[in-house]
Amino acid sequence: MNIARTDDSTNIKSLVVDSVALNGIPAVKDTIGSKDTLALADSVPAKRPGFFRRIYNFMDKCFSPERDRRYIDVQDYYNWCGMVQVSTRFEVCQLDAGEKFIMRVSPKPRTRVGPFFGWRFAFFGYNIDLKSVFLNNDDTDLNASIYSAAFGFDLFYRRVGGNYNINRLVVNGKDLSKYLHGEPFDGIHMGMTRVSFYYVFNYKHYSQQAAFSQTNRQLISAGSPIAGIQYAHNKSDINWKQLKDKINEASGMKLENSSVEGKQYNDEISLTGGYGYNWVFAKNWVLGVEASGSVGYLIQHTNNKFEPNADHSKFVNNIDAVLRKNIALGGTFRLALLYNSGPIFAGMQGVAFYYQHGNGVMMTRDLIASVYAFVGVNF
Image (cartoon, rainbow, N blue to C red; front, top):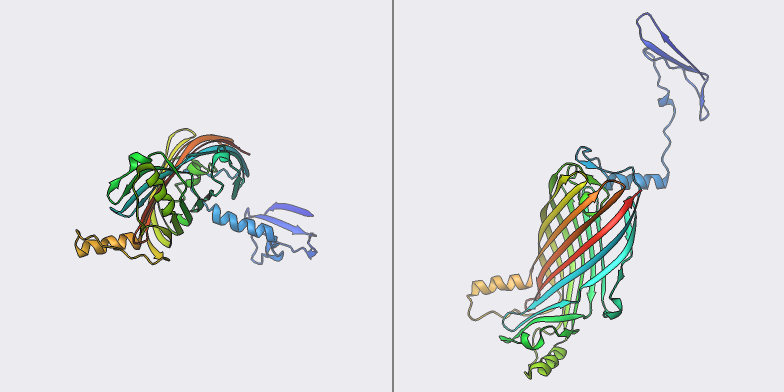
């Protein structure tokens, strides 16, 4: 390969390349500045990336679109992450059939600890339940969240087969809480499968990952509107006979059969919307807050007839019927306090979910909250 650099009378630089063979293709002579220039690069076809490289590039484009580096340190110089996390979950569930029946229960709080390990687009871990030997084996609780630059994804799968304590119980207008407050009751089986997807509009300046997955750093405070869609399948089952026996044993009160017994199923399609904000109050520190609400339509799979209240007008009863049978409401709140210097991060998070849905007879209101403490490294 011979390369010569010369200056002509007009002081235009020229580059002459000859006697070069690239991938078996004879070299061409290219003189920059001449009218008959033929670029060497144009004579060599670009090599097509391999299959796995194309997949990687596609994932990188979806999960890591270009952002304003003044606001967000993408930390793309790290590929791996290791973390230890401790979490505790709380729940309050209320079943409400109006004056006929109100029951509020809470399962025992569950504390878990476990290691997590991640690579760019995936994060995996295993939690050990510190009280698993005392809990009902029917309980299944799986959840996953993905926080990318432009969108988020949540998946919940819960099957709770007991472990509830009674906090409040009203039957036919009589408050029986004093007889059963704090008593365990495993005659309620709750289930929920929920998938939600949402889009972050101002992802170039606001980073969910900085506050909730520790893979970015927020450098300047910023916020963004958030909107999405979600699907859920809800079900509940009350063992009315078991509850009657428990009430009779505690209070001596005998109950008849009730329309609230039996299994209830419905599907839900909801629209969500909210706002998130990251406050960078000191170097390497961020306080992240996100709040969103949802309104959805319920498709019932059980034939429950709404019974109107005689004391209410027809209009009010119609509104109540729609709210109890066809409308679902929900809300999500996330809070994070994080220190992230780049290679080392530590912090705390709180996530709360509220769900409200009915079947025409029974209204279910569920509040689930989790608190996390963690420390980890990027490398």
